[in-house]
Length: 133
Image (tube, rainbow, N blue to C red; front, top):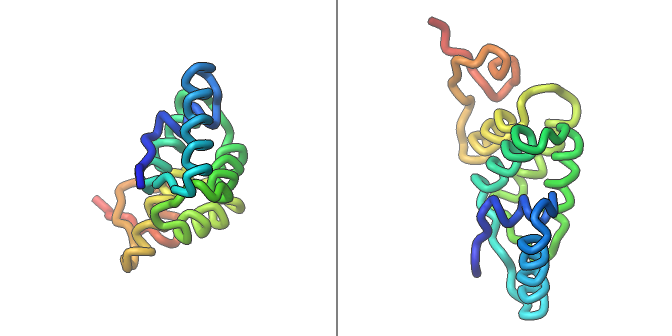
């Protein structure tokens, strides 16, 4: 199995570079025809969120839809798939930063009670705990 870097998924989602997007599509087609899967690390998903927000100015719900669509692709194998699904569900009804929510759900999946933070906004989410100065 081979893993994907963030830029591969960004090309797939944005098609901002026609030649690279075409190559990504070919890589996916080859993997499908060979009945292999491509691994997507959780950190890549985190970077995808950041790039789509910061570089492409894509909105929260469109990003969530993109990630959900990727989860439905049989050729992709995600690290912590259940964590990603919980993240998507929890992000629907609030305005917390998507990256913070993904960090929180990853921590929860790994047995943590809370994520310690100085971020006052994030600390209002139940999986965070504010460290006071």
